[in-house]
Amino acid sequence: MAFGVLIFDGVEELDFVGPWEMITTWADLAGGPSPCVIIAENLRPIVCANRLSVNPDVDFATCPNLEYLLIPGGRGTRREMHNEALLHFVKTQAAHCRAVVSVCTGSLVLHAAGLLADKRATTHWSTLDQLRAMGNVEVIEDRFTRDGNVWCSAGVSAGMDMILQLIADVSGAEAAGRVQFEVEYYPATTTFGNFGSHPQAPQYIRDAFRRPSCSPDQPG
Amino acid sequence: MAFGVLIFDGVEELDFVGPWEMITTWADLAGGPSPCVIIAENLRPIVCANRLSVNPDVDFATCPNLEYLLIPGGRGTRREMHNEALLHFVKTQAAHCRAVVSVCTGSLVLHAAGLLADKRATTHWSTLDQLRAMGNVEVIEDRFTRDGNVWCSAGVSAGMDMILQLIADVSGAEAAGRVQFEVEYYPATTTFGNFGSHPQAPQYIRDAFRRPSCSPDQPG
Image 1 (cartoon, chains in turn red, green):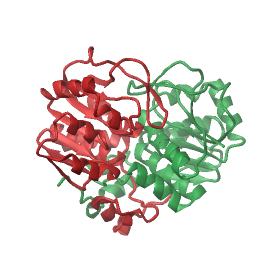
Image 2 (spheres, rainbow over the protein chains, first blue to last red):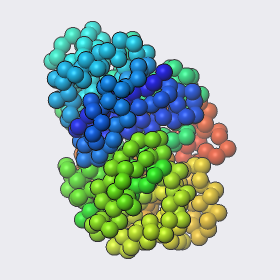
Image 3 (cartoon, rainbow over the protein chains, first blue to last red):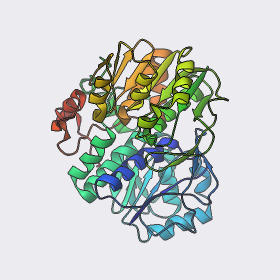
């Protein structure tokens, strides 16, 4: 009953560490899947998109059978979506996973592995058109999507929002609440700048900029 | 003009990786301080609170002079608040920092280093009473506080909320908006369970549970 998080050079740090915080807390406090493992193609240190250096726990050969698999985004996905060894690993594990989830452009890897065929999905705002153009997928402009056992989220916060909902679905709202309270994830809704009118802003971001009454939080 | 992030065994992953995502994006896209460096007492791998293994960039001896210093939380702070070498490093760097910021129980380290004297501060909900009992500090139950050049935040999401506000203060709201949009940090306000009535819930969490109209976001 393992939860695996796949990383690779150029992975976006917060795409996987946000969910990692939630799933390890789920395992420790609320009956979540265990062990939680960081997987990479081999065991050398991974250099993330913003230069953080992280050591994987297991490689493709030593990874246990997974019940859950998370694939984060980051610029490295443009290379990994053509990495046959990685796609083989994802397909093989996904075949027995209770859920496969992506954050940001991790959806490109899911698509390349054939896991988004005829499904609803989403991705980082910069990549919505690219994912649409790959075909055979219905791209949704929301924080996250669920279609069968495949979940996809948009940006970094959406990845965390999605995992809390996944925990609620599997273990109940009280378990999700326990994780949320323990890590203290009650974010402000403050919006900065005018990016709600950016031509590539997805619908949920446009909506976020239209709710000033939900942004009362400033330092006292 | 460096931004340093201090880590140690037992550091809470999301406490530092959330801000790391924001500050490195600030550096890359919006004129933020550079380089951004991960600092530890020595260069061996750090084992975080939830078992993620991370490699520091610099140790205390090789760390450049910092303009900004961030101290995350995690159970390791209970040990590090008594680590004289670490406290000496923090005090020495803080003397010339434009801002010193803590996330979660990183505030315990700030207090131990004498940086919260007569200041307003906050911390993780579990540690509000402990911080109050340390004395000579006004503990506030909000997402984050700012008092002079010292900023403190509560839980993991508050650390990210705080950094966006810091960016807005230093570089303007448009710069903060650019970072927020690039990483796509527009979190849902969904609350799970009944933790708004937990006896240790700080005021801002109680408030978060009272705003159902701000929680419309569910997967479509």
